[in-house]
Length: 231
Image 1: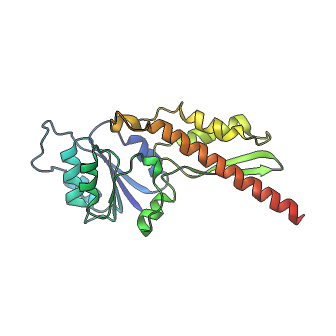
Image 2: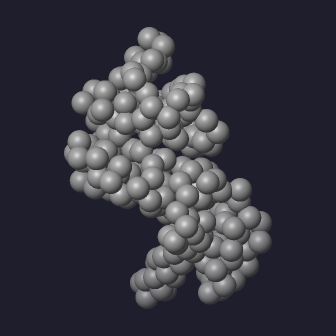
Image 3: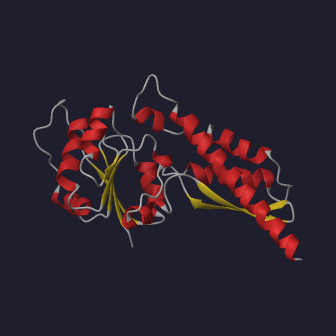
């Protein structure tokens, strides 16, 4: 089973751990945030260091930039892929991604396949939301989460859709409702990195969920039409 390590120095990453731990062998490592703005060397307990080094996918939710840099510089060659969830500034992003097996997504629920087998195995289940809708005639019978946002909001939205639309005729409003419901989930993404002039991350997450349900609805309708033609 794919090994994932989530490392944090503050309040972020716990929800991602809970979501990922249902699908992968996942470790959650909490490090003490450095009191100084500058870090001379990384001090990670031996047990935690082994968990980090043995991971296939390392995900950093550390907010101290020097700690993040130390982790990435020291561990990128020992893991298959590093995902930096908390970063600020294009220069810092470019510095981290220069390692080749490091990615700094603008928002964690935009992750998709990149051609690397290990990374693709991970994002087949975690990343940009993807759902499946089952129909009985024109009525919704079930909603299955195929790929979840790391924070677990996709399951939150899917449960709402089932509660409101199960056994009801599928309408064009359903994807819109899915996107709006995301706004009620206590998303923390906009608090990890502060950009005063960038698109709101919660708005982006809402759009990703709307699109996921829209695509699933279109696919389900095509399947229904094909069955009717064969009959």
